[in-house]
Amino acid sequence: MIRFCMPRLAPLAAFAGPGRPRGHNARRLTAMITRLTVLIMLAVVLPVPAPAQPTTPATSKQDRRIVLRYQAGDQQLAFAVGRTAGSALGEISRSLETTVPGPVVVYVYSNREAYRQATGASPKNLEIGRASAPPDVIHVDATGTLGNADRVTRHEITHVVLNHALGPALDRCPRWVQEGIARYFERPTAPLDPAVEALLRRGTKIDVDRLDDDIEAGGERGRLAYTKSEALIRWLVKEREPGVLPRLVRELRRHSDFDAALHAATGMSVKQLERGWRRSDAWIYVLSSNNVIWLLMTVLLLAAVVLVYRRRRRRRRLEQVMEEGLDEEIDQPEGGGPTIH
Image (tube, rainbow, N blue to C red):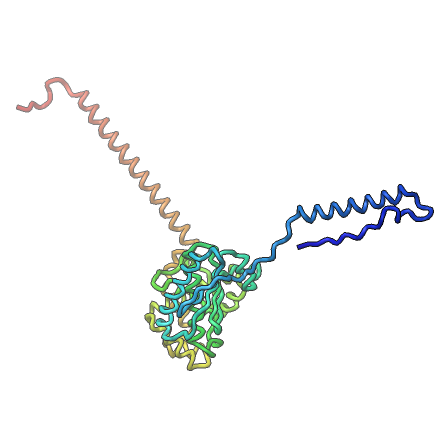
């Protein structure tokens, strides 16, 4: 509340000192009263700014595994995210053969600005989820579709489970492996993500040794690095069955070097992993080549031209035969033809 303290006004005669005309003092007093009146009116008319609302979700719901925090009015959205988080936590923990001892705190945001302020993400940063462990906390930007929020939730829950599964060995696990596993568990039974298929069609080459730097760089490089990481993990699971992921986690805890852990878990090195993946999709690279595409288009065009030419030639021959037969029938003499009894 804004308060104004008005000065105590002296009698009008007090402004009339020796040598000062009374009219001059009266005008000064009138101007002072006018200014005070305007200030008071402005204070009444202008709204008092409301205190800033907290950007961190304030409402909470807790069960044995998940603690939800969300803003009032977002209950339905938050409960849907909470159900996804609870089921994903159990499923992924079993898949990676580990346990998460305490509940996971899930912050759900239906406003992009609130997410950005709570996480400290820069305006140019396009991230829509973040995880930390311990403590086990994830932030989910649910401003998009609910299906997208479900995938973000499963992705971040995977990071929490991985943090517990690897423990101190987390630092020895490359970033691309962590992100590839998290992308895999977004939709473990689904085919390759459309973004991965687009990457394969484009034939973009990304070296495994550069994946971590590309992920950190963000932007187009980061998106391509994420899709390549997912493609490598999906190919690895396809070749070695889903049990390869918990084996890789166990070997990462035992070995100080990722190459050694990968070889112990799969029998292949990082370079062999990349070569195997590229070889398995070589036909996609061949068919996606621009030169091959233009060649196929040219062949199809020529085939269409030949087909049209043959049809027209056949039609002309048929018309010619019919004309010749009609001419013979007209030239035939009366009674000279065979008679059918």
